[in-house]
Length: 337
Image 1 (cartoon, helix red, strand yellow):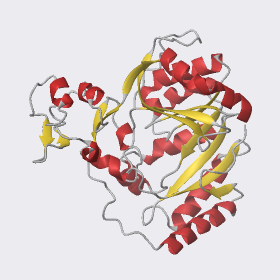
Image 2: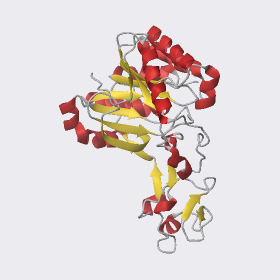
Image 3: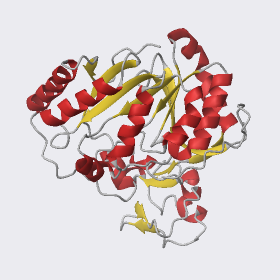
Image 4: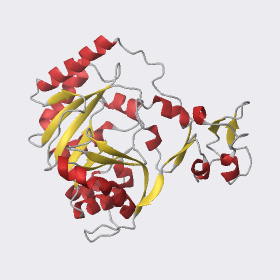
């Protein structure tokens, strides 16, 4: 993967006018780094994991999410039809009851005008262009909580390094404002991009999804080797790091894979490793796939009984701890600077 590594502002100072695509702010989070934090979610990802809980983050461009259960009917409302530049119903798939059920994504230009006018939020805008200054102002509304709890701002995605120049400018601006910074990245990117950001990052959240290259590509759409290479480089840095392992039934929960993962982490990370977090599988993103016109990839997956899965979580932690790793179940373990 080739990367243009010339930051536009180029002088070590943030460019407040630099713009990127942001799809969400999540305030008062306690799972995305030390203390109470605000998480900024950027559009775009280098992976499309089968179990993804944020499929609205995959593409960098803005998108419209369709929630038919919220629609009050085009006969009663119809604001979306009036707002659409096409000025007809060709782009909308409308049921016999007058409910907008989906949109033709080959026709939709993602101008978001329909979402802006929808009073019921049946058409949701995923992604807005924002400047660095706008993001800083929005996130720093919570600075009192950051100061009180040792928190700060976490930049997440998708993959924040898809919009790497915007991410670097945000990190510079938060650093200038005295705000603790964390980046959540899967590291499926060119290391030269990560290097541009490292001087402005205080804390890193990353993950390992599978140690088998074939399965990693099959499950995430991304080659494993660049991820492992970047993890090794990160392990040589001075950045405090938390590594997360999403434990997906029948995909990466074998003892062999957990042992391989534990050996790799133990060999790669030393004193700067804060925690290894084994994450429980959930389907919180399942409904989002249909709102984007996508089929949920794991809809036919056979789930083990709850007691069996809980046992596999405990087993994974036991295996990881056998390599001297500070392993825990979940993200609600206190992280400190």
